[in-house]
Length: 375
Image (cartoon, rainbow, N blue to C red; front, side, top):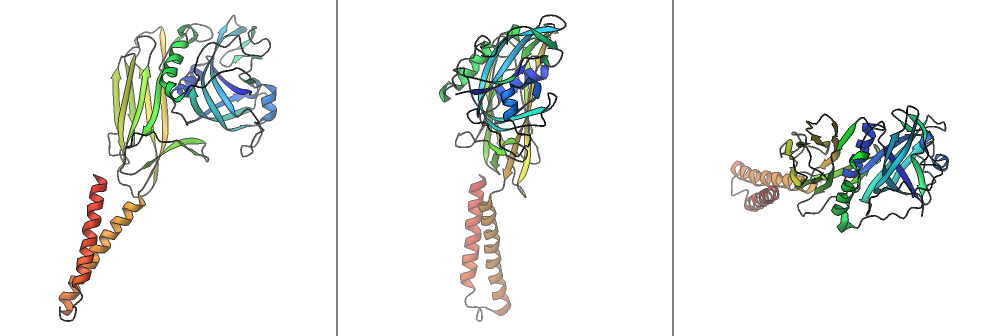
């Protein structure tokens, strides 16, 4: 089966960061890559529709593999590909182009899946003519005539569920530091490798990410008042400088701290932070902001920091509102029955006892349920 390859290169710092973010995202996240059409294989260019609402004839190319490309500048006008590292599988969700010319843009939205089981340089196995031969170098973009989106029959395997963490570590180890440079070689980058496992519920199960088709973004669906935990890990092949990780949330929506901070210089670490929303007046949309920053003191290495937002929808508990309303109704009936007895006398209101007992019993039971619910 042919697989669609999407490459992001060292042509700019932003493109390398795209790879690190794709590596760090929890499974099921929607990621977005974009290219000028001149970087696409001609077959892919033909398949892409010009209408965002139209499905493209992807046939057997729904599966994709995201790769990191290291290219080296030979002289002022020429460069060549040195390494291609496959890092992760994905499933295409939406793809379209803005026109047919080389300068038009192709947009790819895909759902990230697990990592490749073995991350190694596949430059010698890519079946594209003259891919390793020098091409004209274009500053800030890449190498002209070297396409970044193509199909291939490479036999790459997706990691099993129980191999997820180990495969992440292998990828971090496999990407050579000398391949994390600018094309000219004058800037050495230091990557921040982090794996965001996702959000777990109180039953210790990870939530499944949903897709908002309006914005083509993934989001987590949380329930008000419930306890969740945001979990992640970091891994560095070599001793890192001190780093700072911050998770920020809206203090008006969450009752837990609005800023969690972790400051370390360890090569590997795992962390989990609690998230509990306040009781809300209506369903709300918000974001969690995750920032990972290397506090580098080595001027010869430029840090590649991570800064991502996770879309969150917090929904109210309908049953909670119903029980709360029943408690108010019960209290009203009980109090009303006593008031009627006082106004008309017990001899005329001989039945006042039953609505009073039932009303106050309903009120007490509902309040007890709410108390236990909120903890």
